[in-house]
Amino acid sequence: MKLVIGLGNPESRYNFTRHNTGFLVLDYYFKVKGLKWSDKPRLGALWGREDDTIFIKPQEFYNNSGQVVAAYMNYYKISTSDILVICDDFNLEFGKIRYRAAGSAGGNNGLKSIITSISTDEFPRIRVGTANDELRARIGDVDFVLSKFTEEEKVQLPVVLEEVVNRINGD
Image 1 (cartoon, rainbow, N blue to C red):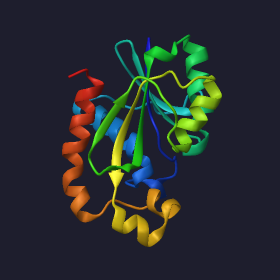
Image 2 (cartoon, helix red, strand yellow):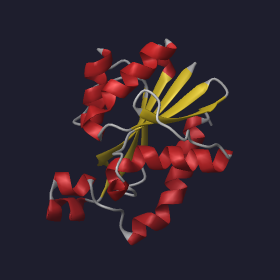
Image 3 (tube, one colour):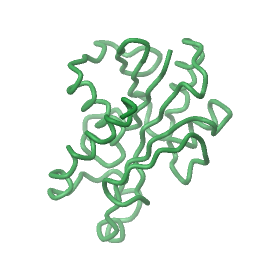
């Protein structure tokens, strides 16, 4: 069994914000694959399944995602090597994708929460670059991660999402 986690915030006001990039990736994956999300949350997450892989969008806020990840790992007896976390990274150039098999949270509070909850940083993750230095400097970090994508970024977003989906598939 494998577990793919998209990080984001659960309320609709956060749709299409930088911090919801993990949710966007999984929603795009489900659209491309013709999959459906569950009608009801399970273990604190919206979930869906494809073959031996469970996909989740934790319904706790971004910085508390780890509790939900730990619950799924414990319930389904999933090892850390069989999870994949997808999150935004405002320090990476917009659209750049970085895969790591393990490592620190690097300032990402969602990853910090997961590391704390599962007691290790030895798990795979894909960071999706959301940087826009001009906007970030103007509004600050907190407002930046909760900001919507610019019109120019929205045009580029499908290409970025497609590339991340290909990485989930191992392409």
